[in-house]
Image (cartoon, rainbow, N blue to C red; front, side, top):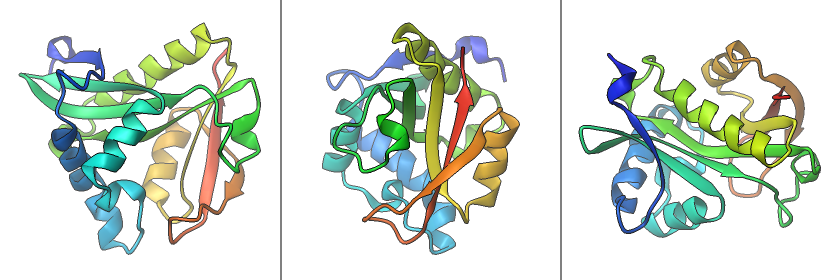
Length: 170
């Protein structure tokens, strides 16, 4: 697939369907739900998707007028209980998904590169994320991209312990 036909757009509630993004998240994370890991994205409502999209800087990957990927960058997390995320040098991302039929085609790379660009423009030197410590394939994916485990966190709304991974982006 030629990634030249894919556009990475800033989320616009008037242009991009929150319902389509929610369905993308549900589908992309469904494998985790089958493994009894309750990621927020597995069952979140459109309202939750919208809240998460607008609490950071969100992007969508578009191919042939279809949303095939999404990611949200968070500059800071003042209401977050994770000390690592509250460091001024750390930006983070979440609500990251690529349509299952388009995975392993470089779309995730495009989305991650976009949040790295934003983090650098904000003066961040570290980009971080978290995922279930039981999501071994996801952890391997991030490690291949240069992310390293730096801690653990137990969020209130999930049924697993999260691994925090980060990458120096200077």
